[in-house]
View 1: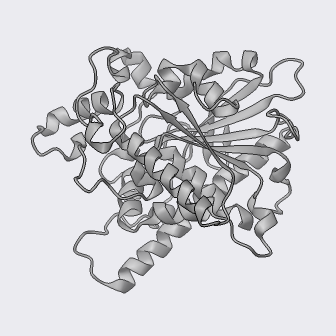
View 2: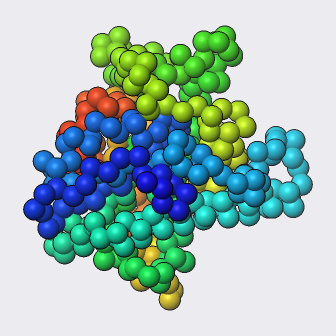
Length: 361
């Protein structure tokens, strides 16, 4: 089923006889699409959840970006660009691109409500309504939605009555606009010692590995995953990989590749995060979903970049509280023994972290 360009790959349907089930809508990450979440679907009904797995634009089943939409991604921006006017134009285009992506997600939620398969939020309880989650690279769709939602309200459905929680699930620190560690950090795609033909395999093992981390940057294991448990991707059959991996958007010149590079270069991800989390007084405040909970979900054995992001967000929340800055309600949940591919290796814990109230699993 396609909805406004994005594609609903799987829909578990409503749990039978339930009037307060939660509709969990999940957007995937970078090249690893909704097949990554397939193991959540069989668990849905027993958890009183309807699971809806969505492929973003340019992924299987969805509508490819048009030439006009791709033109908004400043893929040609290079380190040699010095013109302030060119950078300002590229920033404006990228802002327009992300606002359009937020609008697509908003419209998909409207379509779900209008189809009649969504319950309203149950006031005073952790039940009903919609939980929208963005995993890994999909997290920037969550910050974009919150940053722009006030401009979308009034288009036929009051989503305030339906959206209960927005989940940012395991993003890299880069995707929330945090600076890297002062001493740098390892990433296989930027390792000059790796042969080009070995980088994809090294990256797969690295990003899906299990790690034993300490509580400081110096004690984060940056490079070598444990042998046991093995990296998740190494355990998948070729058929399972084919059902979850789609490389073109993340390949050089692909839409996700261009968005990632330009978003970092133009500091767009930091801007989206700040607009998403900090509330601004004004006539549109009530339209900005000020009462919708934001939940950040992390995993204790993921690659080091994700632990660094968790620490940076926790520090920012503490500073905002101390300074009395107006901010959304942001909660944090942690799956202690999971890695970045928790939806595959630990689906029961994942679904509890996304829709439940537990903060330590």
